[in-house]
Length: 75
Image 1 (tube, one colour):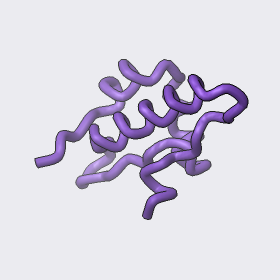
Image 2 (tube, rainbow, N blue to C red):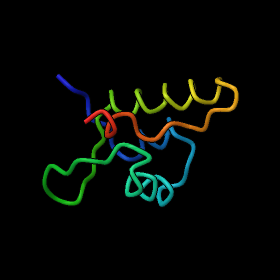
Image 3 (tube, rainbow, N blue to C red):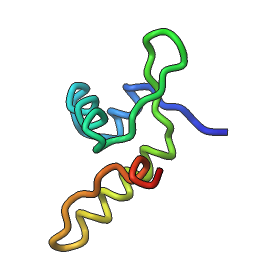
Image 4 (cartoon, rainbow, N blue to C red):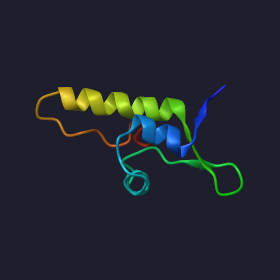
């Protein structure tokens, strides 16, 4: 079973503003939220973890730019 995260949980792990997070998602640079009815947005925890791992790996590789959203580029 997949775990879903609310916006406040995502922002606790990704140090950006709410508007920046949505802008990154719209630009394909961050996993997009899913909507399960109503106006609430949810993110899949494993996609957020993959994105964070990719950012860390890119940052630690000299001369490489942070990776685009690996979740969407693999689809």
